[in-house]
Image 1 (tube, helix red, strand yellow):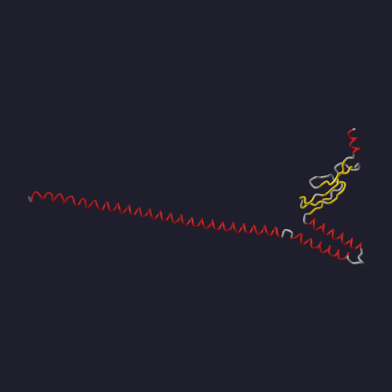
Image 2 (cartoon, one colour; image 1 turned 90 degrees about the vertical axis):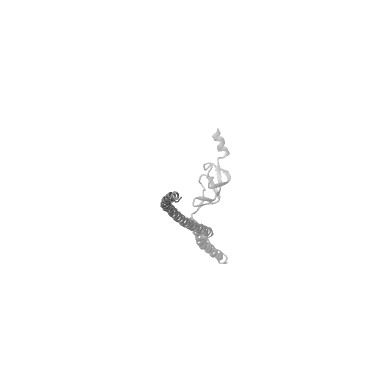
Length: 205
């Protein structure tokens, strides 16, 4: 019986070294896979950190641009309000001279010994000063007497039959008009000529 068991022990002893050789190979593969997985994880972590860093940088840029746009909007709104509030500052300064001149003329007219010729002269100078101020600020007077009627700048108050001028001619200015840099402020109120009844009959004949 001892002889029969010995070959079996011998076979078992031969197989055991083969199992011991295969186990280190499997462990190396697991280690390599674990190392590769850890490397991939580190790369993914780095990519994620880079993406987060870029996202934070872009967010900061967006917030800065938003703040700048908000500041520009507020500044523009403030400038617009100041422009509306102080748009008449220059012309107001110039008009003070006219105001002062009118007050002086009025006070002079209250004196019992006032010289009417001097008052008239002062009034003419004040009027000239006013015209200069208006022209300096682009305000132009429309006085179309003797000119052809222009509905863009004139408003007809009445029609007059006239034989001495061409029909549709301004024969009298009831109230002068004004332009501001070429744009109509107020039309001139005028009287316009038309052909007389007799002239109309002659033309038809």
